[in-house]
Image (cartoon, rainbow, N blue to C red; front, side, top):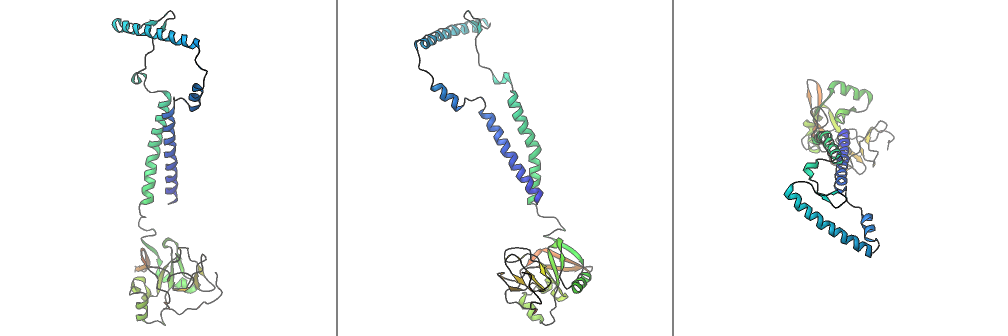
Length: 284
């Protein structure tokens, strides 16, 4: 996700540079506001200026006559005694592309060819769902027998980082099957409860913080706002609206597979399928 976001930001910067370059190119050759203001604020016309304007008019008439002669003879005409050639507007097609235009167009083309494919690929990678094997799909976390043995020996849940899941032993010796079915709306088999385990999502149902395990209290305690859950994720304290959410599980060839694409909502407040009290000092 992070590289895709960096590519997206870099693509936006490139787009701004392209627009700025195009705008600068379109405004090149124009008179500035200061130049126009200075021309308007120049000295008033004098008699000498009037004479120059009259002379310019005479030259203009002479040029018109020469142009007519040139149209007949096909030879470029000269103006007056000075021998100045008559000015003609330049054909842009004949002139071709200026150096500035060439460089601007080359920069834009290179940026487009180089960055747009990268930006497009990163955007697709950012929006495309994660592939099989990662979070959001089925994740194999290990041998179920080894996981349950580790939980018993260490007296703490087994954490599967790839599934963002805590695997915890579900001891329902003091709870009837009917009570479990009622509390979990008949989805206890899907969660693996009859086989003695449960897969808890690490995300707090209050505001989404990661909930760590507190070894001293034997509870899950959220450091963000103080929500607390029993060892199997049933809500015990704090602002959380329910217990921790769970994932569907299955056992394949002795391996525990957690389906992180199927989220089962945590039990409601007041659910006590395991009557577990706080066993020591709280961490939060």
